[in-house]
Image 1 (cartoon, one colour):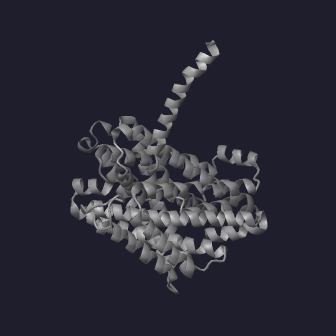
Image 2 (tube, rainbow, N blue to C red; image 1 turned 135 degrees about the horizontal axis):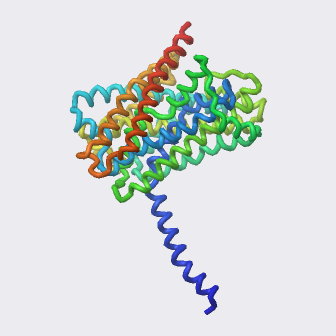
Length: 429
């Protein structure tokens, strides 16, 4: 046997072993990618579109620190799930009592309900661009989302969600189709811009505030537990969180880029994501409009499933009820009942005439801003509790970085409340 043949034959088992390890790693991933990508929902896409249309490329740099903060916060939640084997609301009830948990849950339900209504508004607006009436789209969406969870298992539902993540590539395609000046883009990324006028600061605050929401922490930890991940899977869980956080920022990057290269340069003002899709047609062609609208539809359906699921996980964990997609409806009636109620109610709200949808969305954003700091403080307390985390609590350096990141998010969350109130006053005047 020649030396070359010997080398080739000995490489085959090694290659096969690496392939098996890669497949095992991919099988463990999912919760982090799904949780982060859902953050690019109707509200997130609207925020990115507004940032690009109004301020061009000047806010692209902010996506770098945003990604870093997102990784830190998500990693703590995922680590808590694999080490404790319990969801966040379960741990809050154990450590802080039923009374505090009850009030936090009320705020979360109201907030998530408002956000889910916004997602169904996104479904209606995106499909109307394709000529499909909301009176057909919304009932069909309600039935599909109910069927998805009630008839599926965790693994089957996760596959659907991961498939939905792939379709965010439509925004990447739009970013290339509009043919931006890439030298200008690289320059904007490497040259942080910070203007001290109120509108710019409020938009920057809104951009950061839309990246992380209270429901994300509950859903990520609950899905890690429901998937059955444990301490030995921690490396894969961390990779999952990092990949998800980068993916969500890449999508945000291309949405801002597309709107900056077209709407900003043309001086076109918009107020929501569906308007951005329509405004792209005369500037970049109807295919851009279709891709942008499809991305909005995909994101809205995706989030309209995750938000009620997150709420159902959170409430059932908090009160000790069965909560798992691997259970039948008869085994977890509260879990599935709450999920179906939120979807049914939120969907049919969109069909009601003369409903103040803008006010509903503003209230939900204010509640998001109020609840997020509380949840983040709970996470920091629990992640440093040795009785919960054993030897997996934060180290000194990581803890310092985590506290700084959380304090930044708290300031920006409170700033988002200010942004929302100012916008609300503007709409009412």
